[in-house]
Length: 269
Ligand code: BT5
Image (tube, rainbow, N blue to C red; front, side, top):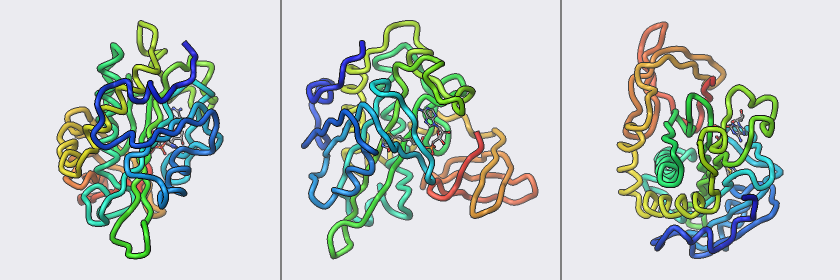
């Protein structure tokens, strides 16, 4: 059913501890992440932004997120965190927050759909080896003292697309719940479930740290071959582990072990 998502849908999953202080719905916007980041000084912690269409949806490293109007969940949340919070510490890619949100997306999908997504480092939600969704965590300093940061976590989940709805460049790599599930997909119910799971997973930095374990259990990257682009160089090797910072540890083909941070590393599909 193609009806726009409402504020009631966003709150329909149950009681919220941190998220939902304010819920903003956009029929069309450039990017929900961009909106929350640019207004982070005036918006409250826990603000949610949801869009039916993004005209400049963002992926990592300057890439685009493409989704037809009304087809998807395109949702971002704003958190105000101390600069030394594990959620934002080390780099602006905020790897722990991103991993926690990806776990929340899988949990929400499993609770609403007969579908069990997997996770692929650093931020992909996948089904059958195809990308169903992605997470983009971005952060910016707040205020003049510099001890607080705005952390914006955006999630895109393909819900109602059929094969022909995807951009030609995504034909081989993308999928949707509509394609993967043998039943009608309730985008509104899934949106409510996602907000609740995000609320649980992002309520505190400790909970987000715990999400790392859940993330590892849903990821089968370890032992697999991987090709990565980092700092102008291409690296090939075998994944050893995802370490406690959310970085990928790789045994390189040409010898040695190296750790790759998500904020600066692109992975070949
Ligand atoms: C991501 O980046 O996967 C993060 C996606 C985050 C999107 C959400 S939507 C709400 C919020 N507001 C925003 O502006 N963004 C967030 P990355 O790993 O860089 O993946 C991007 C790549 O995935 C693109 O270069 C395409 O190859 C592919 N792609 C684009 N749209 C896709 C889609 N709908 N389904 C599957 N793959 C897609």
